[in-house]
Image (tube, rainbow, N blue to C red):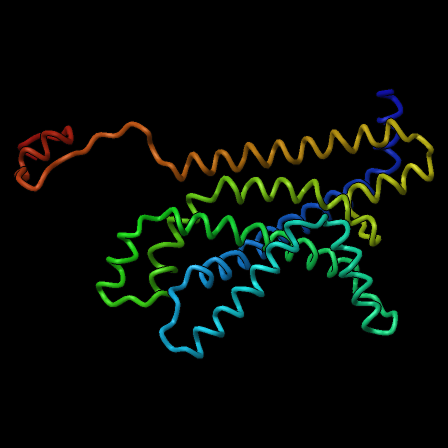
Length: 256
């Protein structure tokens, strides 16, 4: 078995590397673009209701549209979405299909955006209401309050969920083989059609997916710990402490 896997790697490593590259490209770009979509939707859906009647109606209409987008893409499989978007574009353009890579990026980004919208909205809601009130009290608009006060804190709170979406996207890109996107699973199917080593090929691909997702998970956890800072720290100094006492507490010489 291991000998067979070694032969597969030797003969088809270029195809495998190409599949890994496309998988990581779409997963990363899709997650980042989806996060951007989620932030914009999260900010809009948490905006206070305008007092102007016309703007109030427009916001309600937009809320309904955005809610429909979120629910539709969260409640349908990505594989089905891929088929509808890819072939829907061809249907509207007399059979001319969109570039497969562009289609893959759009599909994953839109799908991820629906999940990110709810994740970001939850992150915004988790921020203490007093911070909104304090920002408004000093004259900050809703958009400035969001971008300078709320979003930085919300992003820290939702980082684990964003990381999880990235890992999920690495695995879910495999469904894009239905539109002919040459990600890792598509390359595995192609290799199997040539060598007929079904079990060995898919076992190798499963190991590659595990290494990718596990490595990314460890890396993102490290980033989270770095953002948390030190768990044990000492508060130095006080408003009533003079320079000499502060220097002694810091470990210096009072004569320095």
